[in-house]
Image (tube, rainbow, N blue to C red; front, side, top):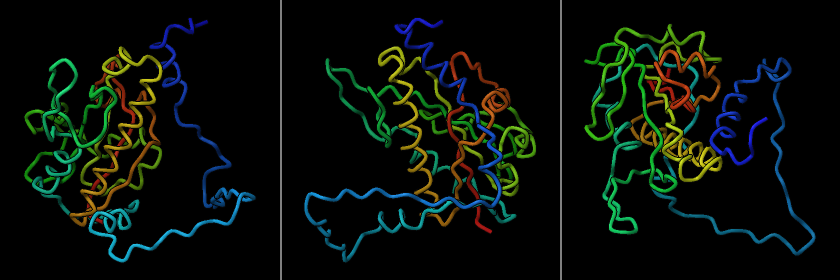
Length: 248
């Protein structure tokens, strides 16, 4: 039995026990009713004013959608680069208490600790060769990890692999746990997942701005993906991924 005071092990235990649940009743063409909550009994609801001109950002938010069919077209590296920079690269210098300065990013991060790392499986990204790369956020560069690794190699690791066949990039967000857990304990695991969600949405909106399509994916087998990315799961694991490409 784990010691409840052992916050790091509690977080890791939850991660290891939250592999995808292959629920046969939840697959196929079954459509679920989306539920909404209404609160009544304390007066009438107050209608909010409509926005006459929602602005460019609101337009991008409305246009963002999940793409499950990609066109068989190459993607220019010049179109992929700003997605990575805008989502993960440092955007400004932030002054912290005690005169400490850090390079802040576009997504909020608990304690400005930035536990996320980024890996890209590239396919027909020109002039980049196909393979697995690590995104160096400080140098804005792609570091080769496994040249030649392709989308076909991900097939057994992704639950919805058929939807990714013509995507140009599968961007994996990984977490180095101790960057956040050493300060926030088990609660830090939640902060890591929140940060991954913020970063992924930024990535999707930047792609939408360039008429590119995205699909956010949490349905993957952690152990298989971690092996493909050559991660040590005791210290770093995949937590989220986003497919990018041209819509069919």
